[in-house]
Amino acid sequence: MMQWWDALQQGVFEHLMLPLMLALGLDAQIEDGYVGALWLMLGVVQLAVVALVLVPLQRWWPAETVAPQDRGVVRAAVRPDVIYTCLHRLGVFRAVLFVTLEPMWNSGLGLLRTWGLPSWHVDALLPGFTDVAWVSLLIYLIIFDFLGWLMHWLQHRWSWWWQLHALHHSQRHMTAWTDNRNHLLDDVIHDAVFVFVGLVLGVAPAQFVALVVVMQLVENLSHANLRWSFGTWGNRLLVSPKFHRQHHGIEPLAAFRGQTRAAVRGVNYGVLFPWWDHLFGTADQRPGYAPTGLRDQLPEHGGRDYGGGFWSQQWLGLMRLWGRA
Image (tube, rainbow, N blue to C red; front, side):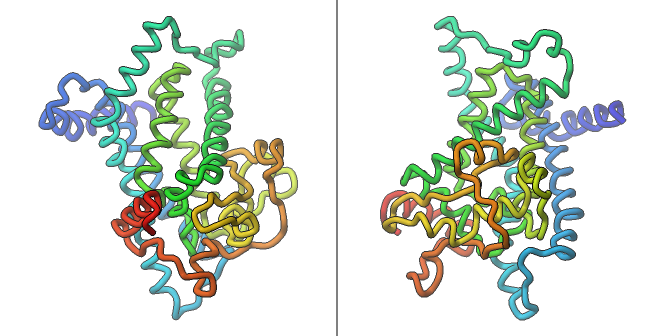
């Protein structure tokens, strides 16, 4: 199986990534193209998991049922989420970051090296476990999951960041495609922090790919329109669709709502593990499956427009950031 996968990666690199990088004048980054082929292949696998596994599961165990007369409206609302997911999982967004921000990351890392700060290789701090792949992966998963929790918490605390992150919460019909429904500037900030921390910690490229893929698939599951809970103990070990739906619910957000442009505080910020929410007092395990979205979207609270299509959502996000929407 591994030999077949390696051969496929080599083929994708030689016949797709290599000609494309040469055409763009990226001769000096050819080695990165091999990792890019891995991103692309795993992205296709992820899209297949969402489309062929999670989407059917949503039909069988929906947390929110859709009336036949509303299905067209829901499909239109979810369509931009599918576009966001394809842009990210097929590497289009990552390729743009590679061309634009990669030099800045490398310069910053080089500056740290001149100051005498090497990569830490945190997994090597545990003697005897350095060569145990799954232990090393788990260590970095915990570190990056806390980083994800912290950034998510800040997205709800810093007003300017909330103006971008609000797009993610504006989906009234949450599905497995909703995870990547983000403003592109929000994604740039998020990915820049993740990549830079990964470089500082000395995470190997292939290991970093594995970390991102695991986190993304769990987030696809946690955003799915599924009436799923992992039970009393399971809900404390892994973020379930029920746990994360509470985060997207209208009422938990509205309960902390301040003025129009204030950041909206919420609950259940966890990405993979709910431990951080229980540790810092932001966990909400109340029963039920709340409607999702934002309170100011409701007609009786102003009917604020967050955009119905990809470009309108991006533009309105910038307008909110500038205080014009």
